[in-house]
Amino acid sequence: MRYSGGMKLRPLNFRIQRVACRVHPTFLWVFPLFLATTRSVLAALLSFASVLAILVLHELGHAAVAKFCGLPATGIDIYFFHGICTYQSPEYELEHATVAWGGVLAQAILFAGALLMAFVLGWIGPPINGLLNPAVVVLTLGNAVIIVINLLPMRGLDGAIAWKLVPSIFNGDFAGYLRARRRAHHLYR
Ligand SMILES: [Zn+2]
Picture 1: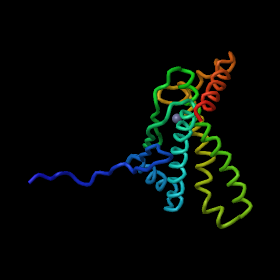
Picture 2 (picture 1 turned 60 degrees about the vertical axis):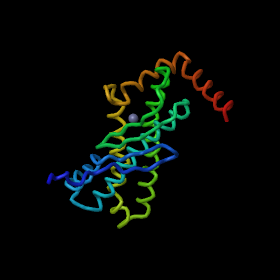
Picture 3 (picture 1 turned 45 degrees about the vertical axis):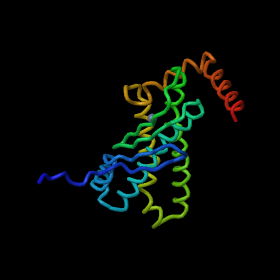
Picture 4 (picture 1 turned 90 degrees about the vertical axis):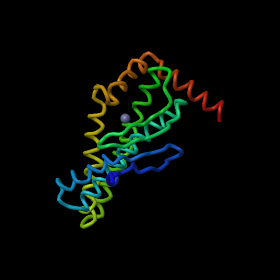
């Protein structure tokens, strides 16, 4: 009799606004990493959930901007410290560059929300603020680090394509594209 292999972990599937999201088993490695550094199950759990929130929101940001560009997203995949948003192929580089900014834009909004949360927790005081501090650190500091790294102009990162939008902002192409998209939304509503 052949041993047919042990338990194989499958991705965790869920849908957000018709977009199929999958959290792949490699993402789970984030937990022991935080457990080793924080030596607290609660802190590791909060950090784990915060990283997941950052990655999912980042990809949802791409999906939202892609939708605005008329390029519906089909899937979001989350792996160990990185994610992929799959969307309909853009026709122009300008569209690709616009969608590239969606991820960090969503992270910037989350960063602002986390700062507000830090302020409120400071006001509430101990022991609540101490308990939730790992989440605040990841959502502010960790989030900012991920934004900066992601915008580096390197292959595989959003920065490789995102900065190509800058010339279009100065020559007016981007403003023209936004106007055309708004008109399209108005027509097809
Ligand atoms: Zn991205």
